Image 1 (cartoon, rainbow, N blue to C red):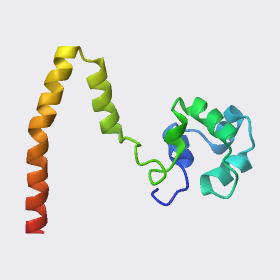
Image 2: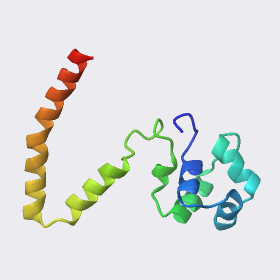
Image 3: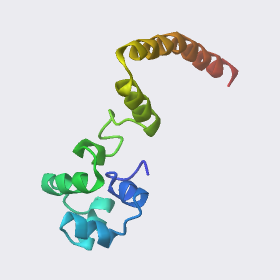
Image 4: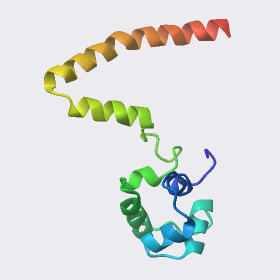
Length: 116
């Protein structure tokens, strides 16, 4: 999927929608959805807004990972959601755990490079 021009195909398939179903929900043609997925049709802001609404996501999440380096992986979103839902005292604990683990991860990365 890394070579896809946007995430419409990925998001559509993840939700079990056909191109026709997505087109009906977004108010455009199946051919337009097909072209957007391949990167051969105009991906207007208006269509982006409608697709984001259909998928229930922010517009930026329609962009490819190359065009949106701030896009979080599912695990990162889950961690962030857990952090945000936690009481302040637990948020502080989560941060302390992350700060404790982070230096060890970098050391493991260095060890992996030396053994590879």
